[in-house]
Length: 255
Image (cartoon, rainbow, N blue to C red; front, top):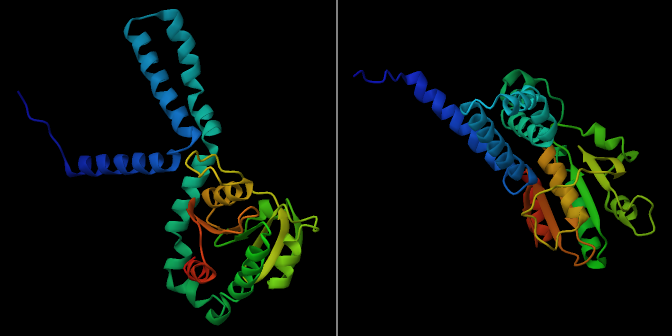
């Protein structure tokens, strides 16, 4: 009887696989993808059972499905794969970790958050009038594919501009506003809708769109509810609700 030859690299290998599985589970938890994953596990177990009993006809049919399995998985889980890569890239963004990239940046620190005060003033006004709104603030990604779904504006952020966009008489009020830096880049933009089953029942389409864009990208989003006038903040697929204007300022400063 020989003892297992376990090396340090084996422990590292196990840890990396466990970490990857944990991150994948967190991404798909509460979504339709979790049910699909369970179905895939059942399919694989059924396929292994057929192979074990040498059922040649059934095995040949199942083999054909397995051969295209990788492509099928990419198609089925494209949103989850995109979300994982975006969050991974944002967390380990090399641009912000090297001195030289910081040295050559020209953006002065005292102008970074000039958009916050007019945005919060607009939200306070829209909360009082129960004017529904969805405002998306970009980080590393400029969301150009979503900008193209709306009308380009490229004007400085102001409370009057935001309020006029979301006025019920405005043709752009149903879409999202995208803010990059201190400018309103576009309005009336179409956002991806979240399929998260853990979203509260009161959440409407604006809230699901805000959740969807923060799941798919590194942006953050602010929503004013048309029904209640409540203020919500979304980041990395997480929801903060029933906020005050002061709390929103703090969250935007931390974004």
